[in-house]
Amino acid sequence: EKHGLVHFSTGDMLRQAVSSESSVDNERASHISTIQNCMEKGLLIPDDIIIRLVLDRLRSPDCKRQGWILDGFPRTSNQARALQNAGIDPDTFLFLSVPDEVA
Image 1 (cartoon, one colour):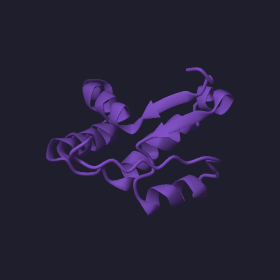
Image 2: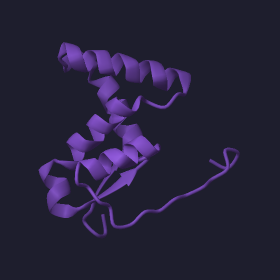
Image 3: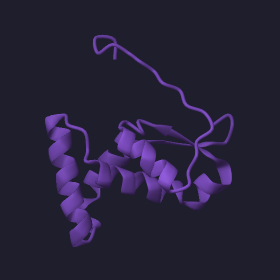
């Protein structure tokens, strides 16, 4: 907030997608079902789905205008490459390594 950047958490985005399941088309409903299954099992969401969600959000006017902070993305090398391929080049990364027993 202090710097006016848009902060978005992939976890929050995924929970919101699952909660809005009733108001989406068939293609998105299929993705939401996959998201829900992965979340219930504690698995990573497939790259193609999470990449699409994140890139759609990064292309929104507020992110373009204000800048952004990604929370929980990228988690895989494919996700990082997808950012590059989309022409999105973050200028700063923070990598936090927190032991499971602390998190």
